[in-house]
Length: 334
Length: 208
Image (cartoon, rainbow over all chains, first blue to last red; front, side, top):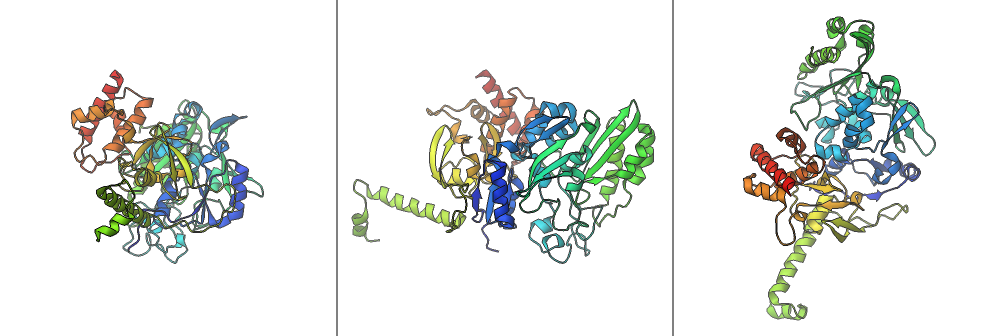
């Protein structure tokens, strides 16, 4: 195909400086507008003509959307805060090192310098059929090229929650926000709403065409970390093909409140195994009230309950089992 | 071509050779424009926030007036409009790092940021490193002394990533520096020598 893919097709560009202006624009332009944060996921798809917005609203000039502050018991992170800033922020490192660690594992230094926390959790899936413009379910078509038929290339795809679409959430920060019980503030010209991180992300059973609840005109304005899991015992691990600069094959974010070796309460969330961060409520229930060692022995099987691996991603089942084990025991003791 | 026709349209004070060169250059620039961009069309302004195309960029310490389309990436502006060909457009997808420049001292992939997003910020490209008398930047001198690169296509990106990292950590160990340049790829697979060269450059920078 003789498409020159090096330039981006024209669009109208807006650079509002306030949330109010951005919301007014987003409402007026509706589905014609694309909201741009760091732009790393977006520009790639503009170049490939997978998305061709009539207008782009660059949020980069809105100072109110960046930075990290305290508000009562919450730590409030502006969604335009870069991943590098999240990685190095003293408050995050001190109390929510899980998030700092995950942010530091994303992609490459240049991408962390520009990519934002909001953009990282709102990025679209990496499924190559979808990203290459195939007419799959997620793109509004009638099949899933990755999981239906014997030739589907699905090594990186889902093992949980496959209902039509087998694409996975590629984010390293998303499972962390679910584990930390973050709350997300979404503004719209006609009013705002607060959504728990767990409900922000959606699977194909809810909406096969999107990975989160944002609708045209919506703007994510705050990511709030409550004190619930501050200073807990954390575990983050990202398994990928290369030691740096890669998307996760599987990642895990875990938070545990311990008394000595005794687990009082825990959250376990996996990434890159389903279209949304995949929480393990059965594991959480099983480990509460036991010692770490006893917990590790009992949960290996239930961690992968309901897994339906595809032709080429059975290894993810084993990875999940081992990662949950390591999250409970810590890397040294696993 | 009829020489007398050239004579008649040639501006006064320009040699024939200069004039022919300028015509060729202008043709090349305009055809590049057609290749890379479609005209922005006559979309009417719908809001006061829509960006102006004629903007001033701060590049290598100079204020450069330039006409920038809304959809233009910084790499395109720097290479195609400001003539800064040091950065390379390798993958144009934020993967290879050959287009790395510093924006307010921080390494970015210039292929993956809109030029309009860097208004009011300081852009530094590889051309801004050496002094005007030609003296190389210590980082460049280190790379030269160690002959760190084979083909060199990725070198400007590696140097800019390193420079940005050294501002935060001027005395890295080899592993730290390797991590700092992990967003840059070398197709000659010359990473070991590149690291040696960059470490040498970092050492020269510390000595001043």
